[in-house]
Length: 328
Image 1 (tube, one colour):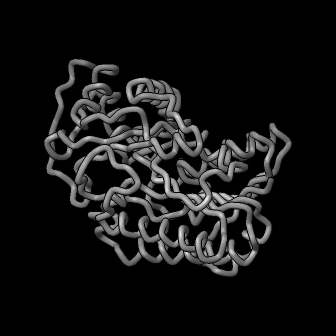
Image 2 (cartoon, rainbow, N blue to C red):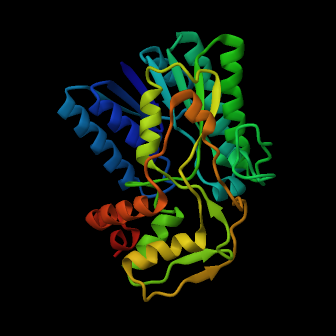
């Protein structure tokens, strides 16, 4: 198949592009290379996917441009069988500072893509949504019927995106699936995430810093589980028109997460605490029974195993990935 991955030089998009290229599919990646974090990481994502394509005998094409460029989107969608829509302005805190920018990319850009997909009758559009749509929990774990009251412009933008996808399925018959990701982590993840910060500081002999009291809980999802469910949706129509949680087997409070990282690297380090960050949800925990019922989704990596894998990868790639090494 011909697979289009928007945001395909980013963390999840890069892993998806590499996965589909390695499976022998022809992959086109669109990314605007927004300098939200070090672009060298995106370049490694591109290299990894391109190498996978070369080894598999498939094709990999990179297009640099914006999801809001209607002419470019129309050109790329016209050649695609299935679209994985990962492009977005990421970051809860960024959205608090620049809500209009987030709306332009995440909502207007998504609508541009969906309209092109409708015109060209693509097989399926898989949309990256987020647990940020839930906001303050009325009960945990979140199921998909839980009220959606996001507490950040980012969460609002993701809610709008998945609702547009649902409407395009119901009104126009465009096969769409929206996946509500719960804090995805793993190799080549964004360097400003909690796990990355904890690992980097501990490897440099510095204590991990927790923002808030550490009682916040998160459902962390390892990238391999995300790749597996996206790969299934390339040909599986069982979830068309649906919105699904994609989470893990358990959740963990941030203080315990910091301790898990610290204990594996340097148990002598003391934890530090800073002020809580505006717009962050207090708790996330996924009920994945719907994804299990429709797709047989079963996450395979718990947080302790995943953290251990990530630390091993980090050590092997510290020379180009670690921000403190790059800046030295």
